[in-house]
Image 1 (cartoon, helix red, strand yellow):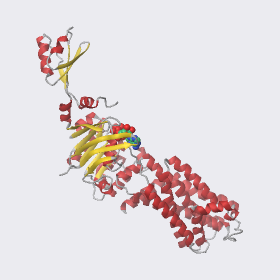
Image 2 (image 1 turned 90 degrees about the vertical axis):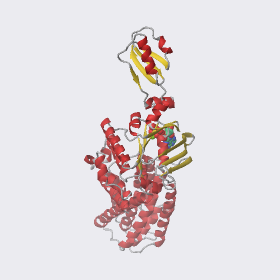
Image 3 (image 1 turned 30 degrees about the vertical axis):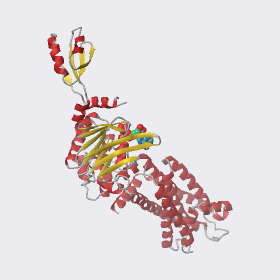
Image 4 (image 1 turned 45 degrees about the vertical axis):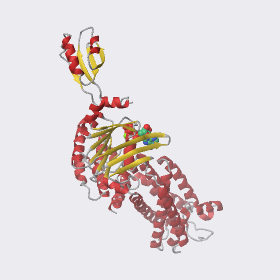
Length: 302
Length: 247
Ligand SMILES: Nc1ncnc2c1ncn2[C@@H]1O[C@H](COP(=O)(O)OP(=O)(O)OP(=O)(O)O)[C@@H](O)[C@H]1O
Ligand SMILES: [Mg+2]
């Protein structure tokens, strides 16, 4: 079966500014695919090209086998979109929006069910402008799902959600996937990518710099683990000679040793050999965030 | 069709929830009618093709045209460009709302607003100022539908060209004011300098007005004027289909 989404050498410029230089990726049916990257990396641009909302300048795009530009009408019936920037008329009520959007694609789910799932039933008669940021966000996700799409694009879905709603949203998205919908999730939130995505593409400055499952990305790209302990001993310079150690840093009694995979065992053995048995010896595994740092050379916030 | 009717019904409810948006297209023409009725209401046209026609019999149908023109020059462009500016059109488009549904619902709502405006102007003119009843209401209705189509097309075109809602508002108001002065909807046409009459004839409202007035005062449908209005509407529609922007 062909992939649900195939992007080959996607390029997009705004005047002279290159927003997406060259991005290729595929999304398989039934997975939650994450597009992770810092502000301005080109994530929104890429997914909006896939949804036929922006014209790509180069490359080949296929979504459900359709060309997003020439077959936009057919495509929009079969996908769901939650856009990073969008609005509804101020005075439209929650139920009216759901009712209207569900009528566009006959044969979708009952909108009342979607409204209930996304916790909007209490607000069914509230007008759009009276909703809080998180409620608006949930309404937009609900609107993206109301036509029972085969693929749903969620662009920063959990922005503005409190931690509890965020966890509920993650559960709901997993359930959407389990019902067979493919999910494309744009995020710059590491925890979300790590917990929710089956596969992630890391985007930086308009290019895909890495791709894989969260586990594979972490094990493949984070070269270091960090061993931490406290020690009063004055001279620890011998640590540098322990196999696998790359760097030792001290903040008073706190010692951090960075090194390759087997460094913990070697450091522990060397400590014992020097008569030191720190009770707080522990190792910190790399996270997606470390991978991100390694791959892009900068923090998320930069 | 179902989507079109849902969209139209929602737009009507939105208007009812924020009636102040109706002031311009609805209340202003009524107000101007009251003021001009006070000034010229008891006079008759002196010269020209309409010599002898009571001013009020001219004003009432022509103000139906003014309501329609205010929708097309101000209300609709401001409404649609505000939707575009705020990202409402983006949202609609991403969910598969078609141009036909979006613009069709605006046409239906405009027909409704224009109809309500026409009724209030007619009642006011006939009851308070003793204007005559429309001689051929069905033919007046035809002119009203064609004029509304024309000005809705112009309105969507202006909305597509305006960079922002504020720009749409300033340009639209200016246009509306010019139309008001030169189309026989303020001082009687026979009192305007000839260059103003010529300017009026170069703009669509004058032709809408004549096509509304003629059947109203018993001269029957003016097919020439109606054809001009329809042609302007058709051209505006064709251009709009090329330049319409969702974002
Ligand atoms: N309409 C536009 N006109 C000009 N430049 C744009 C436009 N849209 C985006 N850009 C630029 O393109 C780059 C990529 O933008 P994009 O919105 O795709 O980033 P993103 O990865 O979604 O970022 P964020 O995490 O902040 O949402 C940014 O530098 C942005 O300034
Ligand atoms: Mg973005």
